Length: 114
Image (tube, rainbow, N blue to C red; front, side, top):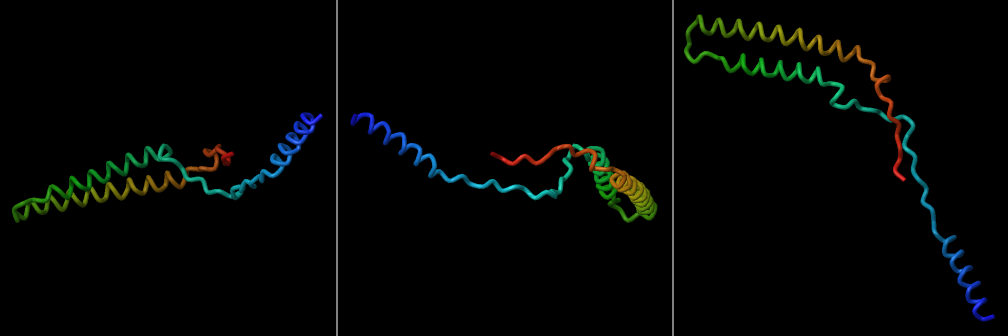
């Protein structure tokens, strides 16, 4: 009989120990999360901006060493043309970014860790 009482006491102690475990409440994320686009969505824009940067650096690096009027005039004309080209391409990039609708592209939902 004593063995049966010990088994019963063990079961009740296990149940009490199991009930004492406090469950922590999981914090839910805010309903409105700002989803930021990944780099993959801007691949074309980044490539164009890298090309513009390279062209600007090349135009600046071609500065003539001598103070010859004709060489300086050619340099200024070249830089002027590159700046015009860069301005039009950046305007096109801006317009393409404004036309993109990112609401349709994001299909992920927030999944909180367990």
